[in-house]
Length: 219
Image: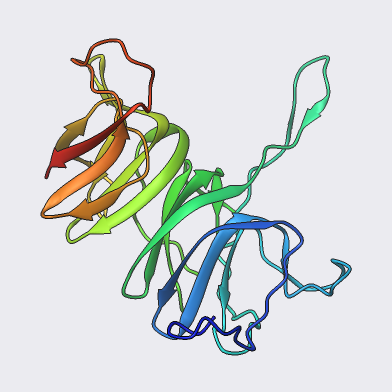
C-alpha cells in the first residue's frame, strides 16, 4: 500500500500457507511463516519452492534467489507413526545483509544443525556461525547492536544446572549467551527509550497469569 494515501500498490504475492513476519534487507523483502511455495497461482498451484523463509522483490512480488533451506527431518516413533515436524518461522529481524530468524526447525541449508534460531546471508542464503544453544519454541527475535534478543517457550542450558528462559540475549556472531537475563518475560520484543519492552511475568512477581504484564527491561 502507498504509505501516504493507502492506495493499493501493484505488488502482489501469494503463498500456499501464511506469512507471519517480514522485514527489508536492502532491496529484498524477507518473509517468514508457514509455507512451502511462494509466487503461487490464485488456486494455490505452482510457485517457487521455499520452506517458510523467502526473499521477495518488493516491486514485482517475485521470489529472489535467497533460500535458507529450512527443514526438520521426519522420524518414526518405535511401534508408532512417522512424525513430520512443522517448519515455521515465527519472527525475523534484519541486520544489514544478515537475517536472524526464529521458530520451529532443526536444519538450515539442508543439513546444518540449528535449533529453532539461526541466521543467514540474504544474498547467498548461506547460514552463518550464529548457533545459540537453546531448546524449544522461539516466538520473537530482535536485533539491537551487538546483541540478538529472542523470546519464547525455550530454555538455554548453561551447564552446572543453570538455565535461562523467557527472553535471552545472544552474541550475533557465535550465538553464545550474554549476561542479560529476563526470566519468564517471553512475549513480543521492542525497543523504547533505551529499554527492551516485552510482556510476561517476572519470577518475583505475584502469581498473576503468564503474559499478563508489559515489562520494560534494562539492557
